[in-house]
Length: 219
Ligand code: VGL
Ligand code: ZN
Image (cartoon, rainbow, N blue to C red; front, side, top):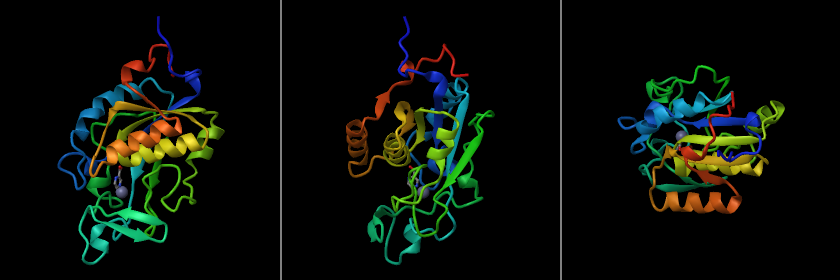
């Protein structure tokens, strides 16, 4: 009757990406409807034994902030030593209210909160590898050492941090699915279409939460 989308759910982890005040309407880098995914993420999370929460966590004056570059405004793009960088409003500054996880996010059994984007000179959309494409966060090693071979991603924003994390999870060899209805996108300048194309061609599964088999228990 039920067809699992993953061959071995007990070796799966849920990766909850950047569900933080600054990415919710009212925050500094609001993702439209970002608040709507929180109840679904809580429900999905309760079925996973392994939950990892990623948190965008920038020092003040971070290189990805438009305010750090004279004459630039948010959504401009600049060239940095590691490649093109979109400039953002100041957001998720370490220890600020905006950087806190959404107050309704309820994942008490999550064992790892991974903070990324902490390097003042390198952005990190991905929870696995920073934007220089070589500095790792250690997350792939953490998951492998816990015998995880499958990851499901949810959170914000689908076209930036979720997509980059999913692509890197796939590149690191994990079976990788993005639960699309548990994500919301920024979607500027075609970023969402591009992210979806890239994920598809890399072998990332794009699924709906109803396709996730929850009753046979990840927990
Ligand atoms: C994000 C832009 C800048 C995200 C983080 O979480 O998708 N987007 N920093
Ligand atoms: Zn950021």
